[in-house]
Amino acid sequence: MNKMTFPNACQVMRWHFHPLGFEATMDAPRSMIVRLFDRASGETLLAIAGIPCAAIMAATDVERIIEAVEAEMDTFNLGLPVLRDAV
View 1 (cartoon, rainbow, N blue to C red):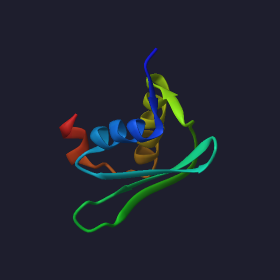
View 2: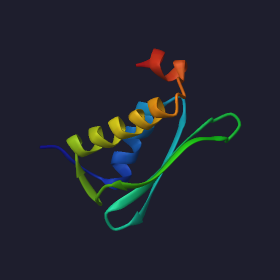
View 3: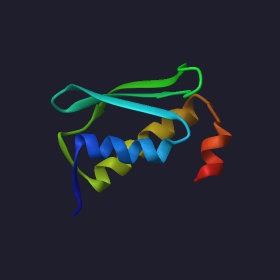
């Protein structure tokens, strides 16, 4: 099982959501706040609080977080064809 630190997990998520901007901070020992934003304008497109996480996470946990963020993107109908085409 691959494990990574919180900063490394955040880097994986930055790469995944590129070309959008991605920020994540731990707001408690076991949860985080995620923000996706337009890199050009700095405008926040989506912010989610209370996502379960840890200081050291398995790769499957990072995948779960990515899937949760993508589900929220779909819920708010952000579309974001640039992101969908990049994958």
